[in-house]
Length: 316
Image (cartoon, rainbow, N blue to C red; front, side, top):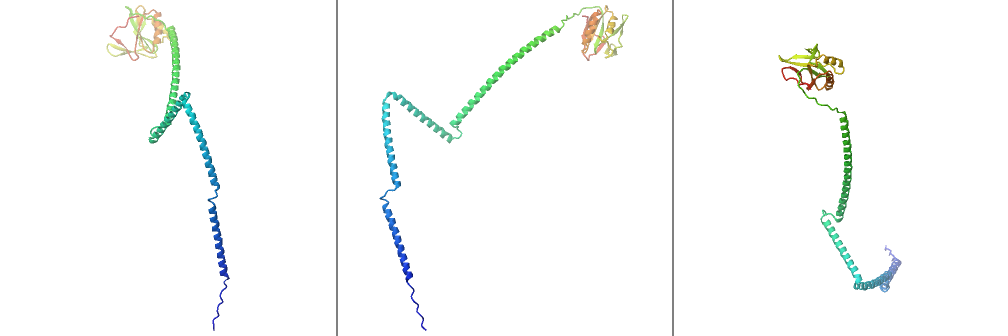
């Protein structure tokens, strides 16, 4: 059996493919032509930015020409002023000002360079601050010194015033003391042929060494203790509550003094430190009774001993 032959395919698809490819190439060629045509027109037609740049350059040229004209006019004016003698001094001062300014700027640059190179060196601002601080402290110290001087002056015035017040008080005290002081004429010792009688003044009381009965003496054993220390010495001790009180027992003291013969005996008071007031009262009573007297101070712990020894002091 014979095989059947296959019919050839239709070529319409190939034709369509060819036509599409051709149409695409035509479009590409058209686009390329348009691009080439645009690039060929751009050098001949100036853009807006180029026009603006040209206008700016033209304005700058005009401004430069105007500045040049002003500079030329200023140069001519300066030449006229230089030739004018009246303006010569002013120009010289301006030159000096510029020199000073340049010198100041150079010094400031050197100071900044020095402060940058060595941080230990203080800057000009720091130096100025330190100077101002020192000046402020100096002003404060001067103000404090002035205040202290004023206080010292016031204190001296107060001291002087207090000194005057103290002097016035001293004068017043001296006047009061002079009014209260009794002027006493010191008695003088004198010789006598009379015998003596010791009266011990202690504990604010009077202790006669002997009692007198009808003019005859006998040892006082009532208010005194007689202690035999040796064959030739006796110690006398007072009994504190047994003596005669000159003020409270004035009658007993007066009776004791009346029993003593005043024309034969003078009194010797032995006064201890605690009994000077009692001594003054007893002394006044003795003087009123017509007795001569003398007295001796005794220390508090000094006992009174009788025996062979120094004679008693003479009457005053």
